[in-house]
Length: 80
Length: 255
Image (cartoon, rainbow over all chains, first blue to last red):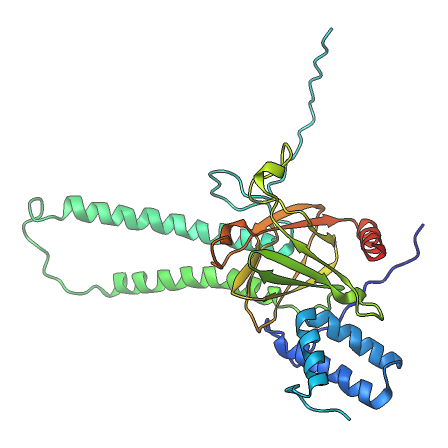
C-alpha cells in the first residue's frame, strides 16, 4: 500500500479574501525574496515560501520578475 | 446461435457534457452546482406562478375591458386594499427568492484552505495548466498545454469540439483552487457540471474553489470571445480517485 500522502498548497491569505488573487501572488513572491535575502536559499522557511510563491504565481510571471531582478528593472522593493 | 441478454439493471448515464438541443442544466458534480440547481428550482416555482397570473390578468384585460365590450370606463381612482396587496405580494416573492440566493452566494465564499492549486492560463487558442505545488529545486514542475482534438483524430464515442489531448486530472473529495489568468486576451474558464465560470484576464489572477464529489469526465468551453478560434478551446477535467491522482502526478514528474 502507498504511504500516506498529504497534499499541501499555499494557504489562503486572509489579507486578500476575494476572487482577485493578484496581490496574493505578488506578496508571496516578495516574502520569498525577502526570506532569501535574510536567511539564504536553503532555509526551510524560504523553501516553504518559494513553494507558496510558485503555487500562486504563473511561471511566466515568476520568470519575468527573475529576469527583471537580474537586469535591475524589478518594480518591487529591493532586498539586500 | 445468438443469445440476447436482457439487462434489468437501470444504468444511470450522467450528463457532464453539452447535449444537442439541451435546455436544462448538466448534472451537478459539486456542492456549488447542486446549490445552483436547487436555487433555480426555487426561483422557477415563483416564476411559473407569476407567469400564469400575469398572463391571466393580461388576457382578461385585453378581451373583457376593451372599448367595444366595456364602453363605460370605471371612474374610481384608488383602492387601498388592492394597492397594499400588489405591493406586498411582490416584496414577499422577492424575499422568498433572495433568501436561498444569498445563502448560496455566501456559502460559495466560505473560507476553506485548498489542498491543490492549479493554474489555468488562457492563450490563443488553448489552455495551459500548471501544477506548481510540485516544484523541484531546478524550478521544474508539472505543466502542460491542452489543445482541442481535431475532428479527424476523434475516436468513436468522443465529443466533437469538446475533447482535448491533455486533460486536467483532479482527485475527488478534495478542495481544489484554480487560479485563472490570460496570457494574451481575455478568455473564460467554464465547466458547467462543476458550476464554475471565471474570466481569464491578462495581468490578473482570479481564484475559484470547488470540491468534486464524484469521479467522471467534465467538459467545458472557453466563455469569452478571444479571437477566431474562440469556439475551439475546450476544457476537460477528469476527476479520479486520490490514489490514481498521486500515481498520475508521480508518472508525469518522472517523465
